[in-house]
Image 1 (cartoon, rainbow, N blue to C red):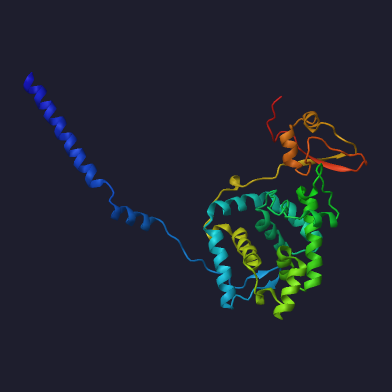
Image 2 (tube, rainbow, N blue to C red; image 1 turned 180 degrees about the vertical axis):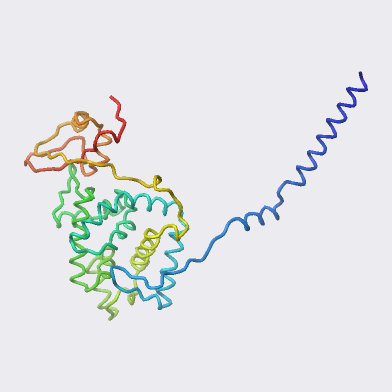
Length: 309
């Protein structure tokens, strides 16, 4: 009996030794691990578009300076994969809202990509106070007719803000002579672009020497345009169900004050959070409306949110 137990113990010990040797032999060394990573992970230089245009206007890609600047933005935005996928998903949700407004106002469709680089298609607020999808400053918004105060801020209203952006861009185009310069002026201001054109004795954006932000501005728009119009070409893979969809809504007209928006939302079959998701321009828990102004509040159609009692 003792001999049998001793034999079993010996066999188990031998098995442990063999497995240990194999584990050591199979364990990745720095050398073969690095080789595996190099073989399986690839980063590619990107082909530039043959005849890039912005708003129907030529981009002089034959100029080596222009070629390198566009290449930089394509590389940066293609290999920032998480951000790229977010832009693709959000564009599916918000471009159908923006595009008809641009068309109605005679603004080229390419300007939807300006909103992408301005805010990432979110209700962003910059350190300087520029707000919303189109990053409109308070004074500019008021000049173009938006209501902006502590209670209501229509810069957060995507439709109204897009209308204002269209007005500004059309005025810039009329003043500066091209849509490309109008886009640059959205970043640097009409006066700023006019001043630099005069000082440098040129009449084209691509001939201007500009600071880092405005100098990259058009090329960032062009890069996002290329990626978003053909994401799979740049390695972005997704299914239709991965994209974000706009929740269908109906309009509710309000001509009076609402003292408690949370209670009011509950009466509509939703909650305060959902009300604010669809109407971010409502900035306080109440709507003050002493003047009897007509406001249009968007309410999601039933069945798209599971709302607790």
